[in-house]
Image 1 (cartoon, one colour):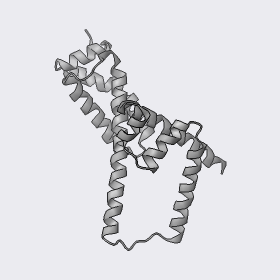
Image 2 (cartoon, helix red, strand yellow; image 1 turned 135 degrees about the vertical axis):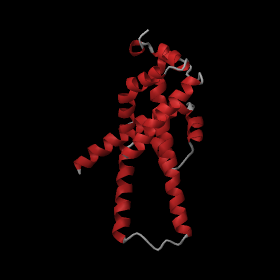
Image 3 (cartoon, helix red, strand yellow; image 1 turned 90 degrees about the horizontal axis):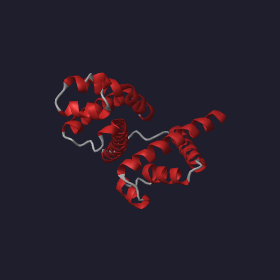
Image 4 (cartoon, helix red, strand yellow; image 1 turned 45 degrees about the horizontal axis):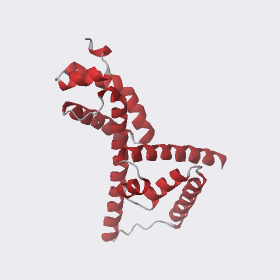
Length: 190
């Protein structure tokens, strides 16, 4: 069987059998979709490139270990993996920013924001809250508020909404997209 025409299940089987050509076909087949997906959720090109590489590294590792439950749904597996890595990237970034802020406070960082910086920050926060309040979906408002503003953990939110971790990532991704579109539309009006 020619690798380029292999079904997703056949591709998984060939990768598990150690075929380098099948691994290259996996990257070739899903490269554009994964790049597009990550590009929409991660604006930093370097971070997007890192997540792109990590998606394929982890996918190959999981395929080789037989961790793909339904090889016929390889596309969904690849997209889910990229979304999860993207969501984890944002969580780590948020934690890193919090650590940097607390270390600056501990060091007594003398660089206090100016009155103008504080005014701009308050206006941006007020605008973001306005966009959040205008989202048509209560679930979008709730998940974005809890995850980004209240800093609730992913596990707590999943438990209260009765969703799996993977489903949470999908909900969060879609809510962020709707927020971004509304944000851009309202920003254009002003």
